[in-house]
Length: 319
Image (tube, rainbow, N blue to C red; front, side, top):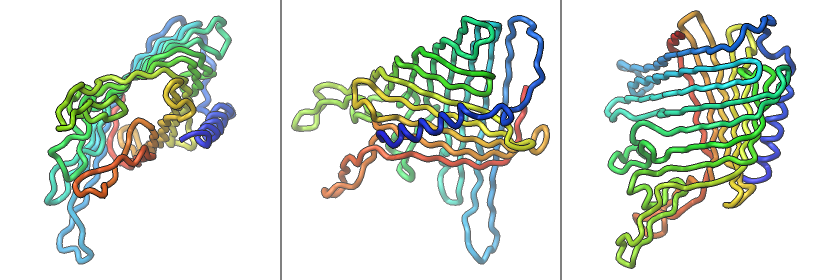
C-alpha cells in the first residue's frame, strides 16, 4: 500500500488538523491551579441477542457480548503533559449448535510524555510508547485445533520520539516521529517457525526437519505519523478518530502500515449507551494464503486490507 495511501493519509491528517475550534467541545477558560493528576476508569458491557421460535423465515439463535475496561492517568502542568492509558476488550459469540467463538480480543497500553519550552506553546517535544497484544488463542473457525495467533504471538511494541501538536492535547493531537522502533514478537514456537507476522521462518532440511528455528522477534526502525481527535458532533453524540501510519526505513520504505479507528458513542443516559465503530488495518508483514494447485497445500497470497465493524448497545460506568 504505497503512494495512494500517503496522499490519503495526508488528506485525513490535514482535515483533522484544520478542524475549527467551533467543532470541539467548548470549555470555560480555567485559571491554572498547578500540577494535576487526573485518573479515569470506565467499564462497559455490550450485548446483542436473537431468538427464534417457529419462525417461518428461519434463523439461528445467537447471543453476543463485548466486555471492555479502560483506565487512564494523566499528568499536566505548564510545561509537561504525560498521558497514560490501558485498554482491555474481549468479545464472544454463541450461535445455536456451534461452539463459543471469539469476536474481539485486545490488550493495549499507551504512554506519551510531552514537554513544551514555553507555557503558551501548542508544540511539544514528545516520547511515545505503544504496546498491544491479545489475551487468548485466535482461530480460523471452524478449525479450533491450530491457533493462528496467541498471547504475544503477535505482540507489537512502538517506541520513539518526535514532535506533537495539540491545542487541547487531551482531545486533538498530531504527532510526527522520524525515528520509531517497531518490534514484532512471536513467542509461540510453531508460529515463529512458520514465519507468521513477518518474522524470519525456520530453515528446514529436505525431510522437513528444523535446522535453524524461526526468529521470535522482528525489529524495524522507521517513521511514524499519528493523528487523533475527539469532538461532539451533536448533543450526546461523540466521535473519536485515531490514525497511525508507519513505514520502515530499511525494509521496503514507502510501503505504509495503516491503523485507522473511527468510533461513535451515542449516550442515552448516565449508564445506557450505544456505540458504532470501524477499524481498518493494513500490515505488509501479515500475509494471507490461497489454496495451492497441490491438494491440501496453500500458497502465499500477499497482504490484504483488514476491516472490522462494531455495533453495540449496552451499559457503561465511569468511575
